[in-house]
Length: 243
Image 1 (cartoon, one colour):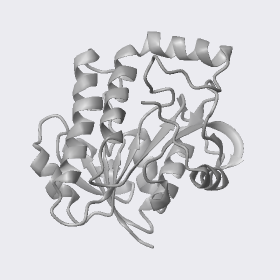
Image 2 (image 1 turned 90 degrees about the vertical axis):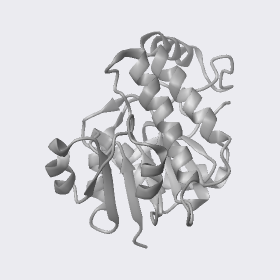
Image 3 (image 1 turned 120 degrees about the vertical axis):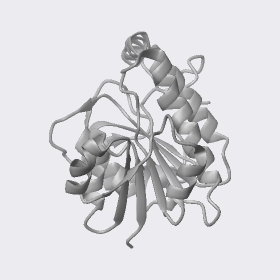
Image 4 (image 1 turned 90 degrees about the horizontal axis):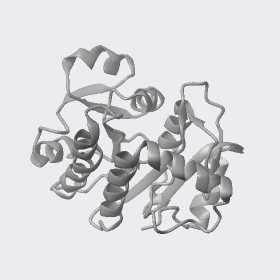
């Protein structure tokens, strides 16, 4: 069924791929900061909406979300601007979107948020992690401490929201290689990268998965068809996010 969707962080590499997948069958809007990106958004079969995640008020985002079925949050500082901007975009920007969805006067759209694998309370280690996972986790946290911290704070904030339905997708290291339509989904070991194309395909499938509400879903490279892996994970109903 065709849906109205809006993508926050519309000019990102995953977002553009997502818009291309959804555009032929859904009404897609993409939020961007600058008109310099307008042609890229239109080429991806989306309608540009001009808002700054850092500067626009919550009310402006609530207005943009009115009448939408799904909001995708795929924005991020991308390591630019240091820890302060990481906090401003990856945490404060995410919370602004959560607040804006709560501020929608009509039916609240669902939120599908892109986070990252191993975003968790650092004191709580998943029971299935092995020594290799612990080593990969330690390297990731040493290299991206602010990113992992503020992603965790944003995800923790979202996990306490009940006014709207939400799902978190937690991909591993991203590549620009071609998609395979296959992955490992749920309780995944760290290290296997996943293509941005396969992340976008998973996000697109989640547009129709209202039964994934309240779940955080790990996604790494693997051999299981993505749609099959999602079916199995959602049927199990166990989130991957450790508060």
